Amino acid sequence: MAQRPFKQIDVFTATPYRGNPLAVVLDGAGLSDEEMQHFAAWTNLSETTFLLPPEDDAADYRVRIFTPGGELPFAGHPTLGSCHAWLEAGGKPRGREFIVQECKVGLVRLRREGARLAFAAPPLKRSAPSPAVLAEVAAALGLKASQVIAAQTLDNGPVWLSLLLDNPQTVLRLAPDHMQLKRLGHKVGVAAAYREPATGEPQLEVRGFAAPLGIPEDPVTGSLNASLAQWLIEERHMPERYVAAQGACLSRAGRVHIERDGAGQVWVGGQSVTCIAGSVTL
Image 1 (cartoon, rainbow, N blue to C red):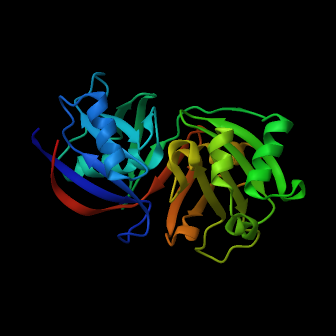
Image 2 (spheres, rainbow, N blue to C red):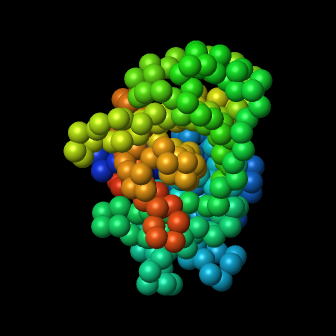
């Protein structure tokens, strides 16, 4: 075992302890898959990342992303939090316009947006869930059919069965049967638009349930918000620029900034703050 630099970052917030925490081991060299997985289970956070030298010459750094239950090919809040930690530790991007992260899904570009970082959402594959699966998931969420406006299975690395609901209060009042969602084997995202939000207030309310990964509810979920944005903007349920709120039911106040640029690329941004800095024995 060795002492390795370590940070715990709160993502999608500028206020410590109001976003989604991420454990970052800044030097993961020499650790086995089993050691990484064991430490990720020990932190008991939704994700733990390990930074490594890139294998692709186009990348600035490489990251491996673990939940308590397994490795992910990509995830949003670990992407922003890992980049924040890498830059804070003195990382220097090779390019002037973008920071390039290498992960299992491939290369992910990030850009600075003032105090925020934003990542380019990976390509999305989506399809309609079968009526039988949708009915089972809706029942586990406690939803009536009339409360579901639309549903899609969204895949940008992680796969989310995602439901657009009739209004934000429906989203906030959900009390899912997490054991049933785990038995069904689906990670589930739910969202609803605010019809007339006050100036500066969020336009979309989001929740993410990941019982199959050992996470009943995720505080703020970048990959889910990325795929929701790609779907909802394309189908004209949401404008090309908006802010999503997530985490209210967990006493968090996550804010996810969405923008689709002129080329059609969706960018997912948020602020991050370091809450713990030191070393870890691994």
